[in-house]
Image (cartoon, rainbow, N blue to C red; front, side, top):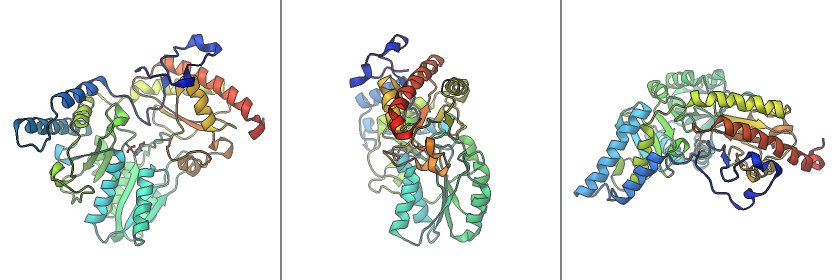
Length: 407
Ligand code: PLP
């Protein structure tokens, strides 16, 4: 784990301090973002220092930069399990999602029916709402989920079978960012979508680097999104897989970069930086699974009233703490050197998470739910320390919350 700076009050004294290295906080917020891999940083620095020419330049330096991009595209294609011509570099996960939706609309006129799930990332949900706001002819059907976060194929069938000729795009996430719920029936959903003439986009942002992507490509999806900063790559770059021979319409028009699919000078350092990560062995679930089980075991021994909200992807644990507010807990955990998160930048203050609400998380836990997310660098020692910090923080916050929530 890389050392993080201690900010302001995090270096406070506390009596169980001797257990911890105050200057090495525990970072359990890897679903939000991860630190940059060393090889990634080296490749990026080299690109910034030496390979800085514009890849469109018609001189040797320009060619060098262009070759850097194309060699990176090959490495990233190998990691995904697709052809290099199927990779579009964007600025991040959100832009990839928006590009897929826009392109589907532009190239499949007059189709107008979208299907998505209520627990999708806001990048999908808000983009689709925006599409509908701009033109009311678009319809969006939302799959509900059960208490574990799973959608029902029957409901998908109902939505898609109504009028197949109007189906445009089914957009589903492979795993949920807040709870780690993996949609195990997604391959059947892909088959259904194709049977009913719909395109399909998979938001693979949370599984990339954890679970192989190739089965999704082999299942014939038209679009798939990856955000490199979630797997120790850099920020400022996204990947959109676009199936070969798919009609495509760009969202960012301008120069002829990316084979006319996205205008603008390419982000060479981030592209080659991510390639350095993609070349490594990346499916880490075997490392994280025992740590995931250990965390849940120790936590339930210390705080038996806790619940785990959905989730079956090792390394993502959404814990419901009873009768406390998540913001107070997160702040306290941070003071003690444990960095976690509420799971979504969109659920702030008194607004509950749309994911947990959709899963019918009981009201006593809804506002007290926190996501702990590990990386392949997480250690058993960190888990043991984290549980002590959580136990301590929960007791302190509970005492303060008695007046609000009762005993
Ligand atoms: N989809 C999922 C499942 C995510 O977790 C995120 C980011 O948290 C995104 C999409 C958006 O990615 P980015 O923030 O890199 O644009």
